[in-house]
Length: 457
Image (cartoon, rainbow, N blue to C red; front, top):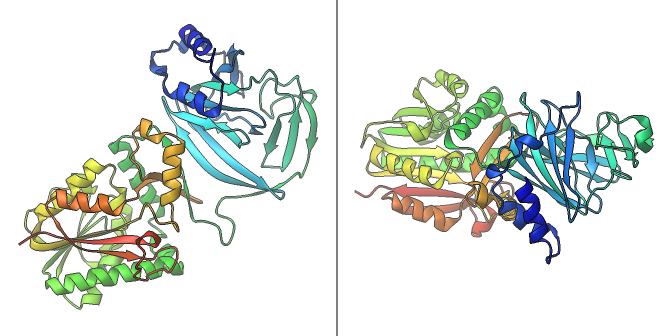
């Protein structure tokens, strides 16, 4: 840590400290080589503890977080900073407060050595949600010489407190004489997903990007969690239903034109869509379902189809067996560009000559979806330095606990991918999803991509 302190003083001796210059400094530091262990403060029962290492030209503090401990929700008024997790996991929960209503906007999870930016003006809390302790190093500017006048919030009661110079932490554990004032019923907190027209899902970054095995495990748990009501969710949302119906029709047209004898449905879920597509064709071809979630496939038993449990990146099927293969609403779940190419190459082998691989994926440039937001988050949080590819998104369903992964695509990226696997692109359609749901569009930046890739004869 002494080397870090020396480097800070030298680095900022002739350079102004801004959010950007502090970001560059933090991201250029190899925290794995620092002696953090000997500077971890002693545990305080029921709260986090702080060890201030530097106050000039900026504040550096090491914080110890016991399991299940969180800071109070607090307002970063007139200061900014970064948090580097060096041990365990921390969650940064961000809020908005407008017209007396507070909402939870986003959660970002960070493990070793993830960086959590704290911009000026943010309302947030840090939270160790795990059963293991966590340690973090914080960089703040201007220096927080005291917590005097910092606002903290208690969303369970609607209280707002203003700390005074006696406060030693942004915490409701502080005694009453550490507050200038406490106001009851200062605002109303709205639970995520509780508003009638609210969003069903939210972006939930995870830093660094987890490895393949962890992502597959998370996706499995995500769909296990949703298996009971997944189909009903599709059917009760008009926009999603219209989109799915259109994709089913496009797939059925291709399957029918192929006079398919065997169709493979990857990431098939409950099998409902495979059955719907077969009904649309009026044909009695063979069907094989494959999905990572046992709970989803348990729902598929009623259709009488053969099925395999496993993630698409590890399946081993017979070559030249299938006339068509689909991976609907799921190709973006594959964890990386390398793995997506591997899956496409495997499907190429499994298809008969002339067979088709059909996928629908989200469009990175669709202004009606998360694509532009994911690009902004990618650049703003420098996610390329934490294993992300542009278009990668982690998200949660409001009301759920599990974090899932999705990749948003550019059209040129899709073409390169399938052609690299040996396919010829037969067609790419643009289908409305959030807006003009189910419509075939001319403007590719207002819908999702539906790709039909053919194995040459």
